[in-house]
Image (spheres, rainbow, N blue to C red):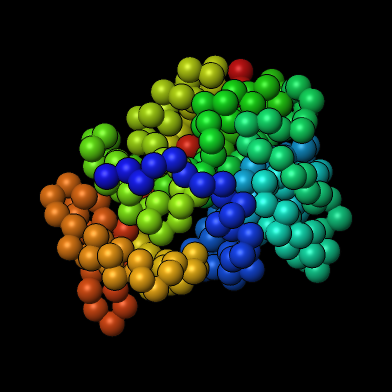
Length: 255
């Protein structure tokens, strides 16, 4: 079912960067503020990896000394620079860099966060190792991302759907895979939450400017899904056609 190797995320996100600034699925200021309050950051340097339009950076900026928003898409970073200035954040800066090669010296960061981005990374294991490298002892690591089912075959079906919509999609790891990866890199996991994220199907297609000739197939794959995949997606047909993606929030610390 896999459509082959993912394309470069820059090719997918550069043309639609502004849509991610206004995306309700990505902004969620109340949920982000509640997440920041739960973590209780106390100053220091925070890295926002795969920042996109910067929503997570803006949420952390009032609570820490400095936020570096990192992405591989310059169009996204241009938005972060513009919006940070508009919001009056003088402690937010940007860096054009991949998640697997962070432009930060060892043991400098108080926190590393990546929200709704890791499924695009080339090498998630290397990203987690980089987070460990740049964090100071006792530093925190926060990952929020879409997760796939534990069944590998269903994961591949889900990745196929995701990649038809966005060719830069890489892979939705299962929760157990994330846990093993974080622990293998030396982190101590403190808590993990998994929730269903209801998405408006048409908004999901439009946000990525999916070609019109591909949309009927995607609708069919989601709405006519069967078995374990249907249980995961839980499609709903009504005034607004919707489906679920599952989202994990994982919080860990460097010893």
